[in-house]
Length: 343
Image (cartoon, rainbow, N blue to C red; front, side):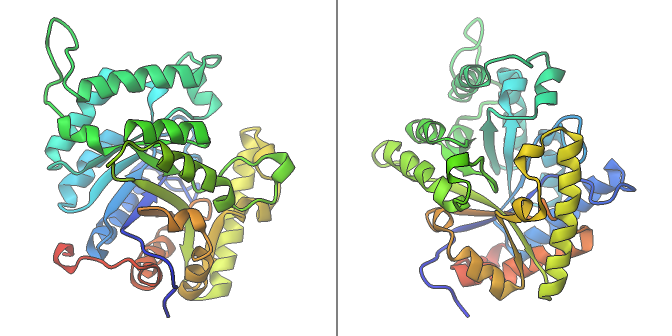
C-alpha cells in the first residue's frame, strides 16, 4: 500500500526522555533513549532530536541537551542530532554558541540547532524570569547567538572559538504563531512545527494541520529569494502491530498526561483522554499512514519528526513503533532510507 501525494524527504525521531514508569531513574531513562537513537541509526532515520526541560521529569528529563547529544554523537556516527528546542530565553547566548560549536565539531558537522521562546512557568521562575517578556528576551538572545556563529567580534575583537560558520545555516526556530514563522523565514532559518497547538476557543474543532497551515504559508512567503525551505513537522505517532494494543497504550498514556496537567495546574490544555489524543496518530502501520496522509502541513514539510509522547508506552513498545514507522509507515509517505548510510 502507498499513500498518494506525499513525499517525506527526511525522517526524524524525537524523545522528551520522560519517565513512563515512576520506578525508572534518570540513568535508565537516558540509557533507553540512547538505545532508541541506536535503533533509529540502524533503520536509516536521518535525524534524532531532543528537547530541553527543567525540574519536572514527567514533562521532560533533559536540562542539558548538548551534553546528551555529545554522548549520542560518539555512539552514532551517521545520525544528525537536533535540539527541539533549547529554551534560549533561559540561557547565556554566547555560552550556547560555544557549546553548540564544540558539539558540532565533535560530531563532524551533524548538529541541527533549534531554538524557541517558550517553556514552562516554573522553568522561567527558576531563572528569575517569571514576569519577563519572553519574546523580547528571545529575540535579543537569538540575535547574539547568530552574531557569534557568524563570526562577529564578541569582545576586544575576539570571535567565537571554535568557529561555527556552517552551523549558522542549520538553525531552526519553533513557534506557535504566524508572526514567529515569518521571523524564521525572513532569517532563512528552518521552521519547527509542534505536535500540538494552542486552539482559539472560537475554532476549537480545527485540526492541527488547519491551525498550522497559516504558519507554513507565512514562513514560505518570508523566505529570501533562493533560500531552501526547511520545515520540520513534529507529530505524536505511536504504531503497533495490533489496533487494540495501540489504542490501549494510547489511552493509558493520555490518562497519565492528564494527571500531569492537573499536578501542574494547567487543566485548560486538556480535560479528557480524547482532547489529549486529538493531535496524535496511533494504530497499525496502514491506519497511521492513512491518518497522516490527510495532514496538509506534513505534506508541505521537509522533515517528518515522530515522537510517541503523550502515549509514552514504555521502552519495548517505543522501539517497536520506531521500527514500524521506518519500515511500514514512512515508506508509504514517500520516504526511503539510504541503505548506504545504514549500519
